[in-house]
Amino acid sequence: KNDVLSGRGAAVNQHPGNVHYREVIRREKLSYVNALIAADKKSIISKIVHEVQTQDPPGRFLKRNPKTQHWDIIPFSDAKRKTGQALREDASHFKLSGGSGSGNGSGNGGIMGGGLGGPPPPPPLTLLKKVRRQPQQYQQQDGDSSQ
Image (cartoon, rainbow, N blue to C red; front, side, top):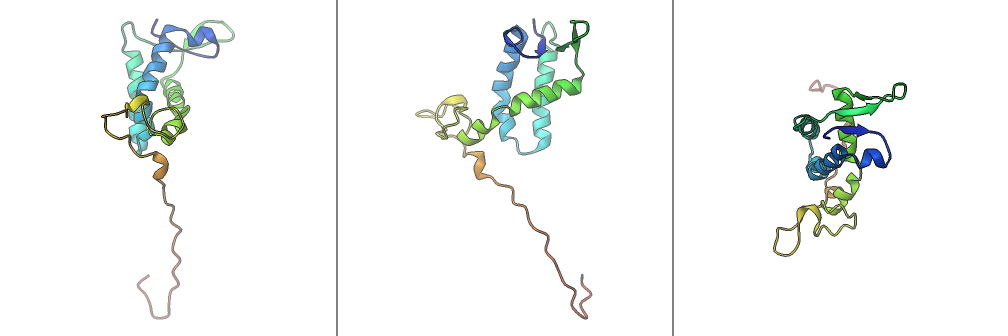
């Protein structure tokens, strides 16, 4: 019931555990996209995996074994990898629109609410750029031993 199945197709997508998993991913995606520190992103991923595993009954991350056709539990590292990928999927729409998920750049409505009477949406993440500095080259001058 709470298991998350890896794979493709309607049977996997409509499984109750996968439906709930996608709801959790949608709920946490904005926080993940806005996290600027890798440790914060890892924490969100672990939080989601932990939430699945601590349900009643506990959810497991499963993958069908092609030889036996049984569902096998995947390692914790694979569950985190799957969760990270799910959080990154369509993340550019969240970055461009301030979280609405619509990708039109309006920033109104959507997950943040942002409608009339609410706080303005956060600025798009695309305005935040990492600046890569080129190493400065110094030439030692005669008699200059400070370098």
